[in-house]
Image 1 (cartoon, rainbow, N blue to C red):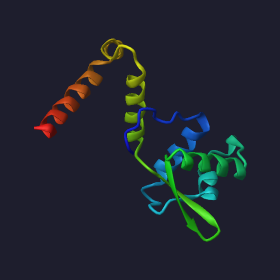
Image 2 (image 1 turned 90 degrees about the horizontal axis):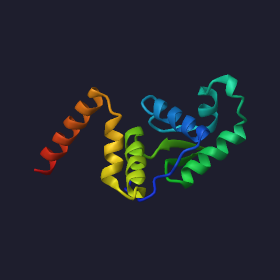
Image 3 (image 1 turned 120 degrees about the horizontal axis):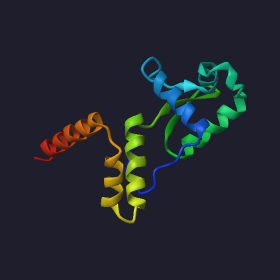
Image 4 (image 1 turned 30 degrees about the horizontal axis):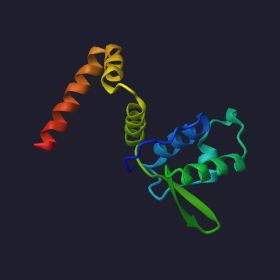
Length: 131
């Protein structure tokens, strides 16, 4: 997913459909149809086919999913990983902050020791990659 200054924000239903596409990507590398996405959702959601189709179309226009024709239907595939979308959202939030350092400090003040360990490990890995 390319770096942009404003990562798309997902609504609840958009997030649910993205989660379904990410979860099914391993066993459906060619993507999922609207019907397949709808059938994989909990029945209590009570969503209409056309609602799922509209939301998947919106996600395609946002560049979050790609779609390919399969007969008369479309097959949808996530354009990036959960992690890449989360990173873009974090980047957009930092880009919007008037004081990035203060924002990071507030974020880190609430971090658990495990999260701080993960952050240290990630920083070390980035530093090694950059040489």
